[in-house]
Structure formats: structure tokens, C-alpha cells
Amino acid sequence: MNKYMVAGVLLVLLGGIGLAIPVVTLQQTTDVASIGDLKLQAQEETSHPIPFWASGGALFLGLLLIGGGLYRGR
Image (cartoon, rainbow, N blue to C red):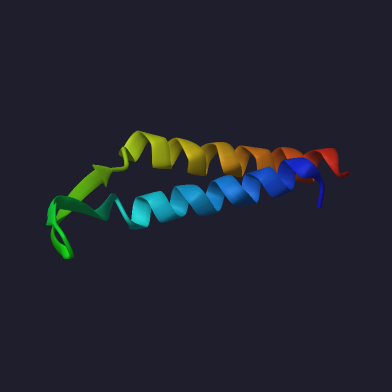
């Protein structure tokens, strides 16, 4: 496999994952207050949506790179 096909496969995988999981949720723990050995912590959840056009574009570009790699390999 040449470098175009490797890049294409990676983009296809990332695009497919982006389409399968449209929202990524992360948790963050922060210290709210600390008095001596006592710590008060809070957990915050933030969600980051993955745009459909970015996932679809990565998938399409990956397929183009795989096709170009196959064509160039002939």
C-alpha cells in the first residue's frame, strides 16, 4: 500500500467513526474548594458535536485517496 491509500484508510475510519458517534461527551473534575485535607470537587460534562459535513467530507476524501492510490498503483 502506498501513502495515498494509508491516508485514505485513516480518513475513511475517522469519517465512519464520526458518523457513528455524532456527539462526544467529556467529563472534567475540578476542585471547588479545599480546607486543609478536605476537598470539595465538582464534575462537569461537556458535549462536543461532530458536524455531519466534516464526517462525510473525511469519508468522501478518504475514498478518493484510496481510489487514487489504486489507480496510481497500476
